[in-house]
Image 1 (cartoon, one colour):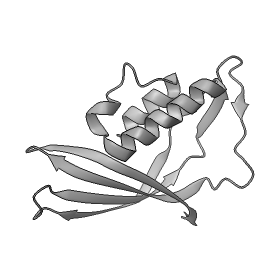
Image 2 (image 1 turned 180 degrees about the horizontal axis):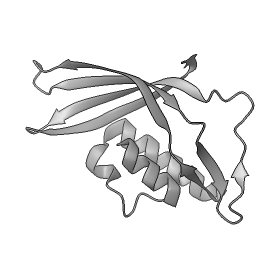
Image 3 (image 1 turned 90 degrees about the vertical axis):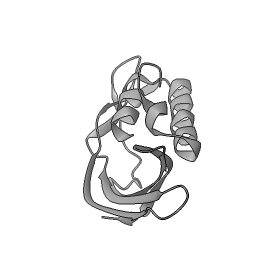
Image 4 (image 1 turned 90 degrees about the horizontal axis):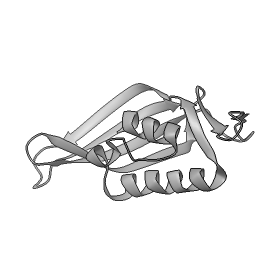
Length: 126
């Protein structure tokens, strides 16, 4: 999902990406909401976040198997730009650049995992 989200945010639009192929429910709604806000503000992103300290837990014995992925997200190289000028918008001074995120997923069908919820934990610096 992250790769498709980065593509969508760079364009300021989900069209032409596979975001809907990997995200649904709250995760997709959050990304589409972000894109609407970006469109209204005339912004996009460049670069990409990085992930480290990835931990995965799974429950495959449920009717719909689930997984939870926790990692340390580093957004320092994922910059917001003003589309009209290409000028980088500075991060808010209180914005942590490395923080924990949690992605919840469900297995749909035999081999398709869908991200259902993506939660940034900005107060959990890593």
